[in-house]
Image 1: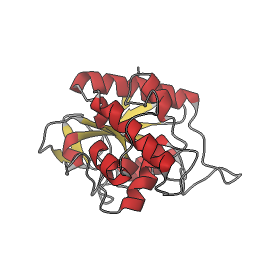
Image 2: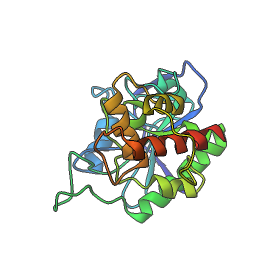
Image 3: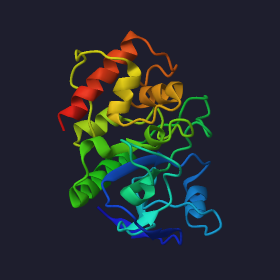
Image 4: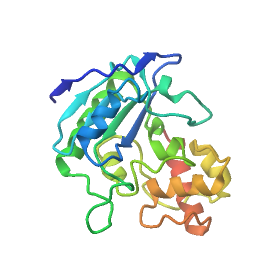
Length: 227
């Protein structure tokens, strides 16, 4: 796995042990524009890595430093997730820069294979638990939608990155309780449900708290409990 170094000035020291991996899409028109912003001191944002559509990997911040990618966020009761995580920005226009037909732009196979290889190496280096591998929308459901419902979370789980429930059949409980147990901030419950759907029910992003939603949430709780 080849990694090219391109330093960003936007980092500082961690305040907590590193135990999370956060995946993002860049959400800009081009990868070059995103990389320029992540390396712009005035922008005040960064990530540890950027993965281009071709699978090229750039490292902008050392892993032991605190990059500025998560913003105001929380997971499993923890805050200051910048101090606790490594951030990977995946070049993709996302919801702001859709494909010409209006659909969300594809994540090319070469890019996803690079994300898988990089993520597996990071998880092994830092012993990151499967239930601490998240998307930006998981940790900031009221603000963020990335890496989007078009991101192949199940494919990553099958490669050993994060989790995917093997079956739906666990004891169903209220969505609020399940989402809190998984790690979501439920201060804005509809936003938390929508974020959950982006990751676990990508064929329907409607924020509806119904039987199917509660069943899938219970299945994820069961998968997380087995970690």
